[in-house]
Image (cartoon, rainbow, N blue to C red; front, side, top):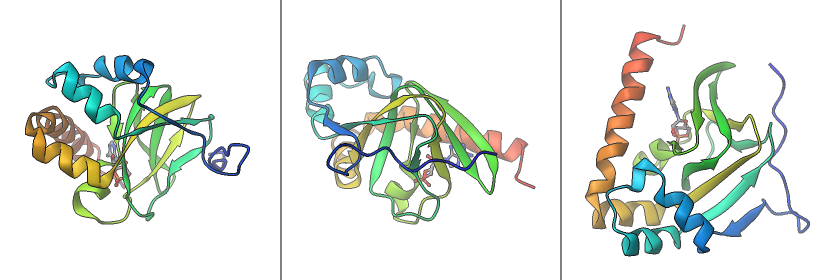
Length: 159
Ligand code: CMP
C-alpha cells in the first residue's frame, strides 16, 4: 500500500479550512441523511458550529492513536478507514467518521485517509456533545450506522 501523504496545508502552513456557515455548506448538509430529522433552523445553527475542510487524495485526515477532537461528515469525495495496513471501510458522501473518540475520549481507533479530492464538515467534540444533548434524534441514524459497522466487523473479524 502506498504511504499516505501528510494533510494538505494552506499558504499560511495551516490545514485547508474554510468556515461552514455559508449557504452552500448548509444546503449540502441538508442532503445528508444524518441531519434529516433536524428542522432547517436547527440544521443551520448546527452547521455554523462546524468547519469545512478540504483534502487531496492521499492526505491523512486523522491518524490512529491521535487525539479525537472532531466528528467528521463527508460532504464530497471518498475516504478509507485503515488499521494495520488493512482497509476496514470506504466511506462516501453523507457518511461520518471520528465519532468513536469523540464519544469515549479514547485515542483514534484507525487512520482515515482521503482516497479522492474530499471535503468534510468537522464538528468539534464539545459541539458534538451539545448537539446530541439538545437533539437526541440525531443519535438514531448514527446508532443505526454504528450497529451496521459492528455487524460488518463481526462478520469479517481482523486476522
Ligand atoms: P475514531 O476512533 O474516532 O477515529 C477513527 C474512525 O474510523 C473511528 O472513529 C470510526 O469513525 C472509523 N472506524 C473505525 N473502525 C471502523 C470500521 N470497522 N468500519 C467503519 N469505520 C470505522
